[in-house]
Amino acid sequence: MTITNGNYPLAATDAALAESAAGHVTVPIAYDAVILAGFGGPEGQDDVIPFLRNVTRGRGIPDERLEEVAHHYRHFGGVSPINQQNRELQAALQAEADRRGLGIPIYWGNRNWDPYLPEALQQAFDDGHRTILGLATSAYSSFSSCRQYREDFANALEATGLWGQVRIDKVAQFFDAPGFVAPFVTGVVDALRTLLADGVDLTGVRVLFATHSIPTTDAERSGPRDVEWGEGGAYAAQHLAVSGVIMQRALATLREEGADLPDVDWQLVYQSRSGPPTQPWLEPDINDAIAEHAAAGATTIVMVPVGFVSDHMEVMWDLDTEAMETCEEHGVRGVRVPTPGVDPVYVSGLIDLVEERLRGTAPGDRVRETTLGPWYDVCRPGCCENVRAGFKPAISGLEP
Image 1 (cartoon, one colour):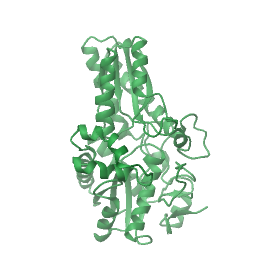
Image 2 (cartoon, one colour):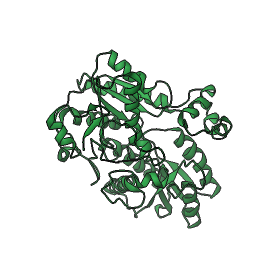
Image 3 (cartoon, one colour):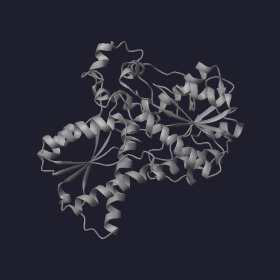
Image 4 (cartoon, helix red, strand yellow):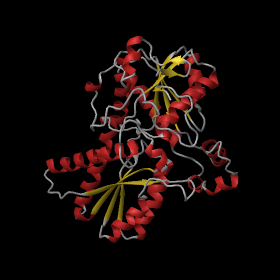
């Protein structure tokens, strides 16, 4: 089995090649640029349908059907927050990299909207960069949140004709990296502290850790295929592990401050499912969970968007609008915790991940918050397969 970057060797040296086979690269690599890879989003009403065509390309969905699912974008003036968030994140990452004296430019490109990833890659190449580290704006393992970004980079190499001229590796999934976890801990602490100050009995509080639902067939194939992850695959296992850590840390922080706290019940829930009703997706849906907890006597729901790095449309619509309406319908108070966004702790943590790859930091020296990490620098064979489309060329992984 070989490690490939299409037709271009992924590993720069024989030593790196051997270590990549074990999953982690522990030799220094002189990356000379970083490309931040995003999903993309419309920035006006005229962009909405063309954007949704890009998202659903190859599925034969007519514009009339796309318009039916465009309402949440229309509600916000046709503007997704994600592009502006990535502009701000790019600037914050650049400032932190410059502060550390890394001398590495941060580029940004999207899968589904301008600026597109091939354009970012071409610009990096034109600026003289040949050894690039990709940083996807997604923390967990699944097709859409990991492998598809690896395929995006491969597609960019193909579109630009730069196979064999540029090397692209990818930062590992960072679901349990300290810089990603810490802002959520702070958010849960702040939410519970506010509820305590308002005199809320925390025995009536339920903390719901929310993430994007995916088809169960994709979930079952998330992560390495030689590990039995249980129901929901590595995708669910990662979320459960991180959510448990966040909850434990938050309660410990408040108790250290002197609060006399009961244990607070929490649950992993899902949101934003799409596709035909006959296709099984991960459950429970957050709105169903809110209704069930309210019926069982809960008075307050704290929503933690643990599956999102920033306030995507799924956060603004599915949580801040729909889930809050569900709370109101069932007579419970709803509170939503912030996403990391451009929190300095998160930004610093992402640059820490870049520095780990620059230095070839050994896995045992990489600080992670769960026993699942550090995740693989080089994805395992068959990792995060797309059941519907099969395996396509992808960077930074063992074949297929």
